[in-house]
Amino acid sequence: MAETQFTPRVFSGIQPSGGLTLGNYLGAMKRFVEMQDAGQFETVYCMVDLHAITVWQDPAALRQNTRELAAFFIAAGIDPAKSILFNQSQVAEHAQLAWIFNCVARMGWMGRMTQWKDKAGKNTENASLGLFAYPALMAADILIYHATHVPVGDDQKQHLELTRDVAQKFNNDFGTDFFPITEPVIGGPAMRVMSLRDGTKKMSKSDPSDMSRINMADDADAIARKIRKAKTDPEPLPDTIEGLKDRPEARNLVEIYAGLANTTPEAVIAECAGQQFGTFKPRLADLAVERIAPISARMRDLMSDPAEIDRTLGKGADRAREIATPILEKTYEIVGMLRSG
Ligand code: TYM
Image (cartoon, rainbow, N blue to C red):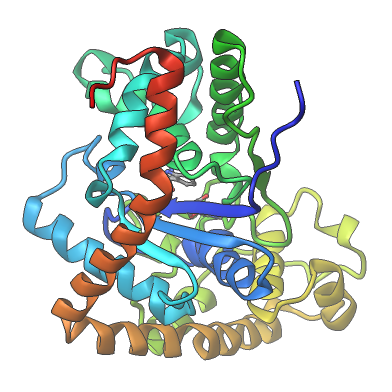
């Protein structure tokens, strides 16, 4: 069978479950903007509200968090005229394709997902069915656009492997090459931003300690305080990158610096070798404030006109549907769903 050529297209999503962190910015958003601006791809970005409700969300907060996330996208540099920007539930094709994938993916695949194990904890009996099926909806998000590339942070790697498995199994089962085998785009510094209190744990909005993370909504004082108090060891910065091995907290701060400065950890080490944290931390705090403060100020500005955000997302959803509808129709045809008229 001749290989199908797919339009170079990027898809990625973020959950509107509140509390955006520096991890979301460096691991995801910053690269969303770079891929948009590179001009080599069509870029499709989504607030995945259907994923958010796999755990309880207060309805009013969910609406507010979806708008706030839209403001984050735009404030960070996503231009709704260049990229397609919308919230998932406005494009029904995501949920429709997800059902087909629920019937392609296997229970065993889902059971092996570390996010499922972490989020469901010991009490799997009481976790929602949606939480278990979460990765099939994620595969649908990506494949409903025939996306070829998906930029994500390191924690989503396993879900993207599952997306490839779903595409492969669908293609095999139906003797087609209809779905692309998507490439994850995970690279550069700060693919895994760690907690400021424990360099072995991911920086996360769900960590009970607010000191463990930098929130995109933090003001300059809070950012500086959190970096000043970040856990480190007593040694100065080493003069080679290998010297960061077994120093997870030091390594994390170097990676954050590199991510914010658009450089590499090697370049940071070359510049700052031998510095004590007493010197390095204030530099990092200044850089973080310089990068984050304009984004949070612009977010506040955008949030003052929620109706405009809603209009933008509505237009984005219309454009998304133009791509998704024919792909869903073709999928139904491949699967053997009767269409009349
Ligand atoms: P979510 O909402 O948890 O996170 C959004 C993005 O931010 C990245 N990220 C991080 N990167 C580096 N260090 C961190 N500490 C950190 N914390 C978060 C995540 O890797 C992600 O790229 N399942 C996804 C949402 C999703 C999706 C999709 C993504 C749904 N459908 C389709 C890509 C394609 C999630 O929960 O991301």
